[in-house]
Amino acid sequence: MDYDVDVAVVGGGLAGISAAISAAKNGLSVIVLERGEHSGSKNVSGGRMYIHSLKTLLGDRYRDAPLELPIKKETFEIYTGNNKASFSFENKDTENSYSILRSRFDAWFASEAENLGVPVSYSTLVSGIDREDGGLVVKSDRGDIRTPLVIESDGAAGFASRYLGIRKEKAFKMQPVKNLQENPDFMPKQFMVGVKEIVDKKPDADYGEAKTILGLSNGVKGGGFAYTNKDSTSIGLTLKLDSLEGHSEKAFNIIEDFREKLGIEGKLLEYSAHLIPFYRFETLPARYADNLMVTGDAAGFLINDGFTIRGMDNAIESGRLAGEAAKKITDSGDFKDTYIYEQMLEKSFILKDMQAASRVSTLFGNERTFDAYPKMMAGILERMFTVTDNPRENIKSVLMDEIKKNNIGYYTLLQDMLKVI
Ligand SMILES: Cc1cc2nc3c(=O)[nH]c(=O)nc-3n(C[C@H](O)[C@H](O)[C@H](O)COP(=O)(O)OP(=O)(O)OC[C@H]3O[C@@H](n4cnc5c(N)ncnc54)[C@H](O)[C@@H]3O)c2cc1C
Image (cartoon, rainbow, N blue to C red; front, side, top):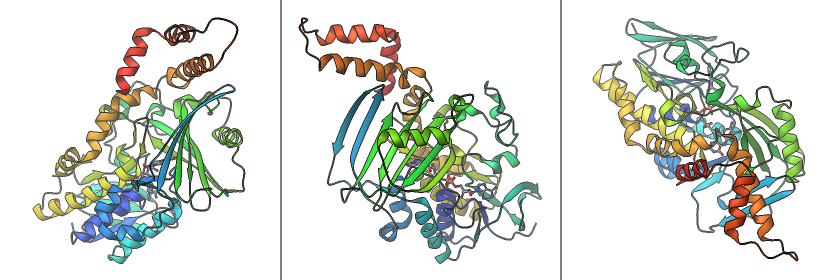
């Protein structure tokens, strides 16, 4: 088969643009197919990017990126009923992560790829991929592209893998949700829904603050966040899809309530919602197949270890590695040998960090994390900060009593604590 390009990238988000930049820097001809009107128009993040991967990909050029504020303050807030416990940590020297606005950032990122000569074909919906003569034919509403290699960067739903029949999630025990694209391969257990608002509220400080918030998702398993930008504040919730399903409230109402409870006032500038992959290391979908490498959310590379939520740095790094692997595969001429990419992933921080976070992430699947533990903590703090005519209770007996009151078994508590450490 005659090929149109060395590599076709499906999806022009962070993973796809990173893959395109990396492949182009390695001398390959690349095209990016993106269904949105521009990069960033369909993309949603809470908005905090750990920038190490961006630096690795772009070197000093990362300084031109439209980043918002460096995050120098971390706050955890836990709400139970009328109680709120919070904890803050400030480090004025750090520049490890920045708040970002995806519509601005992604558009700039795509222009970096275009400056390297990569065509980004917008408003182009990839609707199928066929195998033909040892290569692939990528079908879209703008015509077909013949290529020996596809880098899949089409986000959490991972359509390209599904077109090629390599997602095998039917093996999991969860019942499929029929109304999700009517595709039986979508397992609600493996996804969260992220809802996000950008509010016209300027921060007081000239550095950014990241808040992680528990207990304000109206009984749906999940957590909240708030990040300050230069001229606005991003807030949102990440909600487990299997917990949201059948809940009486819609995600939109839950976030409206969330904003009200946080007391964040200001004009609503933007509302968006998006799927988020929720895999553990052990249940990740296939990352490579003949002629195909899967990157970013499509590969399930989302890490939540309780302290950090990271999809963007993983997307950029996996894209970079796929671009480098594409060069090696093209040089060898064996387009089935995408295992090269898997080997690179194994050496990278992505799979190592996913593996390390695997045990903690099981905590986000259980009820105790969102109900019993916050109540237990609030109960302990309330009693320790209260003085009455009765003899003062010691912390050990308060702790034992609150564990019992919240129906937490000692063995379960110990097991959960071991997962965290
Ligand atoms: C509410 C929310 C909060 C989050 N907060 C954070 C955070 O603070 N920090 C962090 O690091 N991560 C966060 N994440 C995760 C992060 O947004 C993702 O991990 C990241 O966007 C993944 O990038 P990607 O390029 O793989 O996918 P995406 O950004 O989803 O890009 C996929 C692209 O593929 C295109 N596409 C899809 N299908 C097709 C098709 N058939 N044809 C053509 N194009 C197609 C889409 O239009 C899109 O542009 C958050 C996610 C959500 C939803």
